[in-house]
Image (cartoon, rainbow, N blue to C red):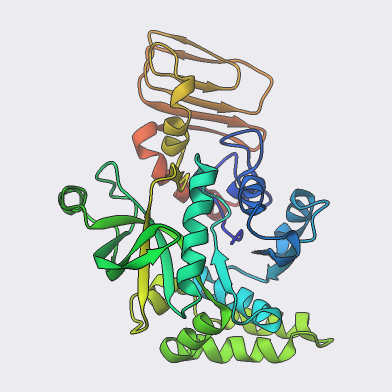
Length: 349
């Protein structure tokens, strides 16, 4: 899934080139890292990338030399529509094989651990179950959804998997503390595994309005008017997450694997700061670009410009300097950067 807008990463991220195409962690874009991560498990020709129609060019540049399939959304309609669209195409060639759903803009440190978890999830999904890979929380995070797990449901490739009791929305701090202490809750990574047949059946049962639109698109796959039908129908699809549409309502078996492979959703500039902890200077500053500091602590610089940025007597700031704009924000308020693009648009910028 590579259709996100990346609004929390303004000004580095833009409508033209959102977060998944940026090199905010590592030498490759997040999308390129995701493709490399799954390559030992999935042949290129069996990879389907769902992107916004306006991002076909940077996606094509990223997959150059690979046989990956690019599916273009006319407009973003959240993850249920995105997954449904991919499942329609996958069902044409492989309806009973598990499909692995991955956000394209996340970061994972332990690729081998990730692949072990995915391989186990694939084995579980062959039975027709819906599988998610949860991340063992190491702090009371209020910015993530959680998965409450029950008893051990079985084992796959040496990995225990657990019955999912329920999916929990982003909690207040008090609840998050309880979840971490209790040991039964996992962070919801947004990674899912199920067969195309299974997820399309669940959408038909639990999200009938969405199913009707997807069925109309399905009938046009391979036809000369596919793009025309997709452009007409897709914007009318219900904009709902797969969690709300299916995972929270289904009566089918839902299982979770507990994983600890150094996962981050790279959800804010603050997350980028923590992911670059190894680059901190003695005062806790992370300088990704040309910068100097004086009597300053715990700041982040991300710059693509050929000019120095100086921090003097400040603490806990994010400064992002690009050709498209300059951001100065408190590091602990970097989630609020998501409002900036709409504010600029309202002012005609």
